[in-house]
Length: 520
Image (cartoon, rainbow, N blue to C red; front, side, top):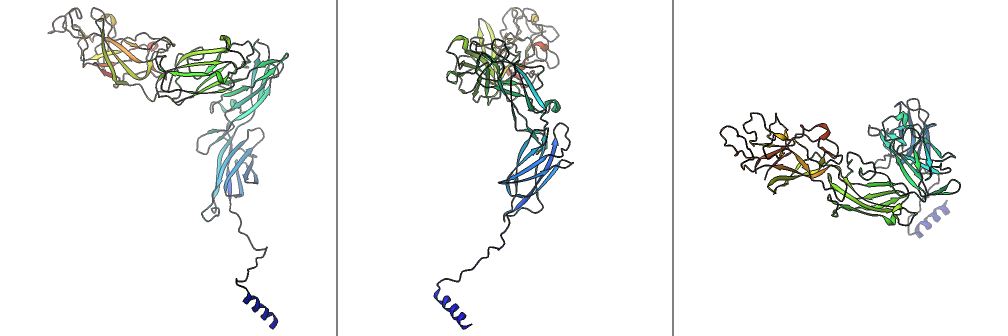
C-alpha cells in the first residue's frame, strides 16, 4: 500500500497540469430533438377524405412512411426538427409534394405535444387524357411525332382554407400512322368541372417525321380548355409553309380581330405564337405611341421559345399603344413568304372607371365652327372599328336653346328629361349633342376606341343662329348657344345598346356626375 501511495504522490508532484478525466464510451449522448407531422388528404372532386394514401416524410437522409386512415388523416412521429419534405401517392391519383417545418425551441428541443400540420392536401385523379391530330403542311398525317403536354395542375392545397392549385403535370405521346397522339396521365378535368384553369400547353419539338423524312421546325400550342370537343388539329409547318401568327394575347394581332380590345396587364408580357419556330436574331420590336408613329417611352425586350415570341415590358395603366415588330422563320432565308412585319394597336388594363382629364379641355374655332375637345384618362368608345359620332351625348347646363318651346330642347341638360332630336337644332343645323372620337387611322388599324374626343358647339348668338322667337322676353336671334363657363354633361343612358360607349374592358359608361367639363 505504501508503494502505491508514494507512486501517486510522485506522479502528482511531477505533473504541471491537473489529472486527465477519463470518459467511458458508454456515456449517454443527448438525443436530437424530434417532432410529429400530421395532416389530412382529400379527393378534390368529391371533397371526401381519402384513405390508403402513402405518405412519406423526408427528414434529411431519413424517410418515415405512414398511410392515411379511413378519415383521410395521417400521423408520423419522430421527425427531426427543421425543414422536411412530405410526399403523397395513391393508385389512380396524381402525386403531390409539400414542405413543412418542424419547429424547435430556443433550447434546441421540439415543443411538447405539438404536431406540424401539412395541408389539407387534395389529390386529383390521373385518368384524364387529351387527343390531338397532327398533320404536315400538305395535310397528310404526321406519324411518329413526339408530343409533350403540360397541365397547370397536379394537386391542391387547402392550407389557407381556399383551394390553391399546385404543381404541374408533364406527359408525352407519339403520333400513330393516322397522326393521332393521345396523352394520358393528366388531371381528370371532367370530374373537376370549372374549379380550375384547364389550359393545356402542347410542345412538338423540332424533328423529322413521316416517310420520307419531313423536317418540322418545332411548335408550342395552347389549348384554352381541356374539354375541347373532337380532336384538335395541329399543322406542322414545313419548308414551304408561309410564316403566320397562330395566337396572341393582343386582340388586334391575330386574326380574326375581336370586337373588344381585351387589354393586357400593364406589367405585360406580350406573347405572340407563330405557326413555326422563329429566329431570335431577326426579332425587331418597338412600342409606338397612340399615333402609331412616335416611339413610346416604354420599350420591350424579346425572348423566343421555338415559335413563341415573348415581349417583356412595363406600361402605364389604361393606355393605348401600337406594337411594331418584324420576325423571320428560323429555317428560311429572308423572304416575304417567311417574314412577318406588322404594326398593331394594343391597350393596357385601366386602373378604374374613366374620368375626364381637366387640363385637357380646349376650345377651338375653325371656319366659323366652334368645338370643344377633351381627353379621358383612358381609351373609350363603341369599338368594332366604329369612329363615327355618337349622338345625344353632350348636354349643356344653364343654356337656353328652346326658342320658346316649353319642352326641353335638344342639348339642354336636365337630370329628368333629355331630348335627342338632332334635326330640332336651330338653323343652320349643327348637332351640338354629338360626340366624335379622335382616333387616328393611318398608319395603324382603327379600333373604335380613343382618349381624345370632340363635340361641336354653337356659342355665337348671331342672327340666324336661333331664327325663331326665343323664350318670352328674349329678342329673336339673341338666344346664345353654349358659351364659356357653361357646364357640358356627358349623358350615355340615351344611347341605343348597339351604340353604347364602353371602356376597353367592355363596361358601359354611365351618366356619372364626374363626367362633366366646363367650356373654356
